[in-house]
Image 1 (cartoon, rainbow, N blue to C red):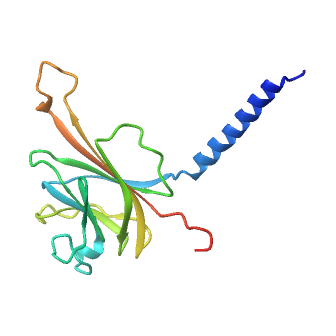
Image 2: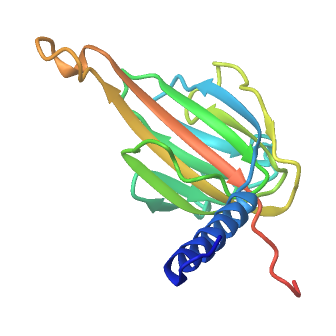
Image 3: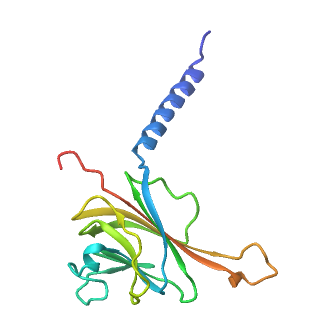
Length: 187
């Protein structure tokens, strides 16, 4: 069987493309574990255990060095979010072995950056109300570490029944994906 130059070119392209796709998929991380929680206040946070144990500055203290990033406030050992008062936010915390794949669906808000955690044991907490009890802890497995994070938020509303108001049901969902930075050669 003989091959034309065009078919050989196509086969080479297909082989290179398949190799690049395989390499990219190998570089993506895998989900290790996750927690799914609900917050019970309109202002809530994902916070490191060192803050809860009064070993680090808390977001409610003036000394905390948080910065506003669109819809979320980020600082050492904590992320702070505000949700409308009549809505219960559903929050998913995920630990990944490497960078997670790009999100499959559109999110209303998305932010990617870095955060430092002292103990590496994080949990959802209400900002003002401590009577709701303690949420589950997600152990990231490394203390005194900077983490990469993708934070996402989406509002789900009635978009199927046009004869009824959009706000007859509404859900606020949040996803926080954490993974360690890839070490550069020589570091």
